[in-house]
Image (cartoon, rainbow, N blue to C red; front, side, top):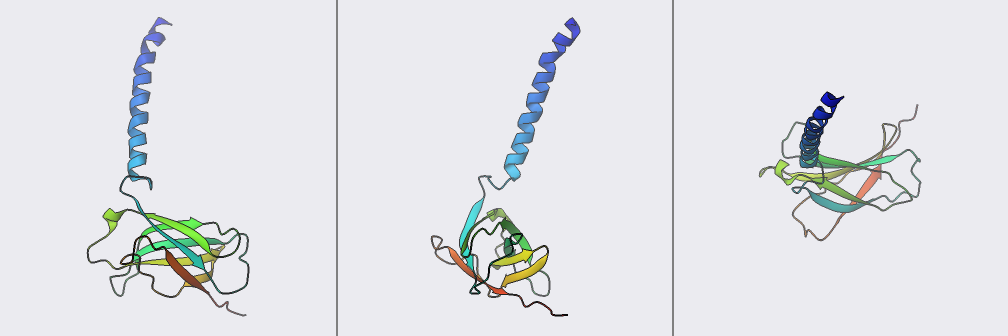
Length: 147
C-alpha cells in the first residue's frame, strides 16, 4: 500500500500537466481565441412562408478571388431559425486566414435535410464597409423541381 501512496503525487502532477497542455491546444484553435473577429448581420426573405422546423441556416465567409475553382470557405456558422425573419448572425473568423489578394463575400444557405430552400443570390462583400454597420442579406427561394 505504501508503494501506491508514493505514486499518487507523480500521477497527479502528470495528469495536471497533460490537462493544462490540452486546454491550451483547445483554446488556441477555438473560435474564442484572441485572434478571432466577427462579422455581424441579419438574414431575411420576402416570401410569406414559414420554414420547416428542421431547417437550418448556414452562413459562410468565402474567398471568391480565384476564377474557375470553387470558393474557399474561410469560416462558417449554423443558425437554428426560430421564429420568422429576420435572423441575426455573428460569424467568427480568423483574420490570419485572409490573403491580401483575396476577395471575400458572405453567402447564406437555408436547407432542410440537405435540400436547398433559400440562397443568397447577390454578392455581399464581407469587408470594405463601415465596421459598425451590420450586413443585411436577402435570400431568394430556390424553385423546386416538379416530377
